[in-house]
Length: 441
Image (tube, rainbow, N blue to C red):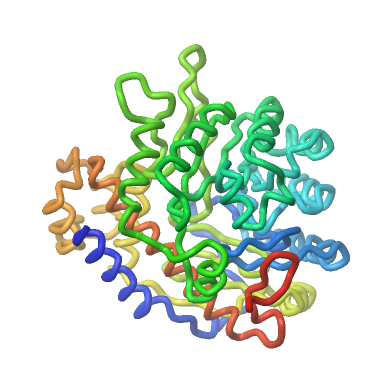
C-alpha cells in the first residue's frame, strides 16, 4: 500500500542521514543517570550454523575462541558495575548464548552476585532444548527464547537449519518438553519468507498453538545490503507487497475474535491466555531494543545511552584486546538529536501498544503534537489511533501494522550501523559468513 511505502522510504532516508558512525571519543560508556532503571544486553556472537538472513555480529563456533571471549564478557560486565550501574534484568542474545553452557551459567551467576537481577532472559536454538542444558538453565533463567523461525521443513532446509535442528514436528516436541523448566518460554518466528505461502504461515501459527509455548514473537524478514545476495540465493526475492496480509493472519489467528488464545503484548509479541491461572505480568518480552536506553556488552553489541548510540568492535581480537587493556570496546558512536529521540520514543511506546503523552511532555518539554506534527498528522490521516486523548495514544489494527513497518525499517537502520562497523575489519572477518563459516559466493 502507498502509506507503508511512504513510511518505509521516509525512515530509510532518515536512517541514512542520521545513523553514521564517528569515532567514539571515549574509552568507557557514560555513567548511569540517577534513578534510572536499566536492562543489560549481552551479546554472544558464536553459532554452530550461520543463517543466511542474519546480519548480527556472529562467527562460527570454536571452543578455544569462545572460552576466552566469555572471560572478557564478564570483565566488561564488571566495568559497568565500576561505573555505577545496577540492572533489574538481563537479556543475552546472539549468536547462540548457550553454545558453551557452563560459561554462560558462570556469567549469569556473576551477574546475580554483582547486580540486583530480578530476571534473566536468554536466547537458544532448538538443538539445546535437551535435559543437560535445561537442567543447568533452570533457576538461572526465567525466560528462554528459542529461535525457531518456522516449523515448515522446506523453509528449514532453505535456511540450512533442518539438518542441525531437526524437523518442525521434532522442534514442537522439544518445546513442549522444555516448558516446565522456565517461568516463560518464548518462540521466535520469522514471517514473509519469499517462498512462504499463506497456507505455510497458517500452519506455522498452528504449530505455535500446538507447542504450548507461553509467548511468541514474530519478526518480519528484512534484509541488509550485507545479507541481500545470500538471502536471495537461498530464500528467493523479497516481496513486501504481501507482508500486510501475512501480519493480519498472525495477529487475527492468535489474538483476534471473541475467544482468543493469546493476548497482544506488543505489535508482534503475544502471550498465551491461561483461563485458569493469573498471568505473571513481570515476565515480559525483554528485547534489549524494547527499552529506550540500555547498555550493551560484547563484540558487535549496540548501546543506546544519553542520546547516543555506541557500537562495540566487531572483530573478536580487537574486542578482547580492548577489554584486556582495561577499556571498553567502543569503536564508534552516533549522536541522536532531540527530534530523533522523540521519534524513537514514538515508535517504541506505540510498538508496546501505548504511548504516554504526559510522560512525553515531561521528558521533551513539548507535546507530541508540537514535537512530531508531521508524524501525528500522517498517523491520524490513516486512522492509526483507537485512543487519542490528552493522556495517551493506543493504536488501531491499521495503526499496529504501520508501527510494524516503522519497526522493520528501524531494524534495517541498525543493520546499516553494523555494516559500517563490519567495514572497518580486514580479511575474512569482514565477510558475513554462512553455514559452517564460509564467505558468501
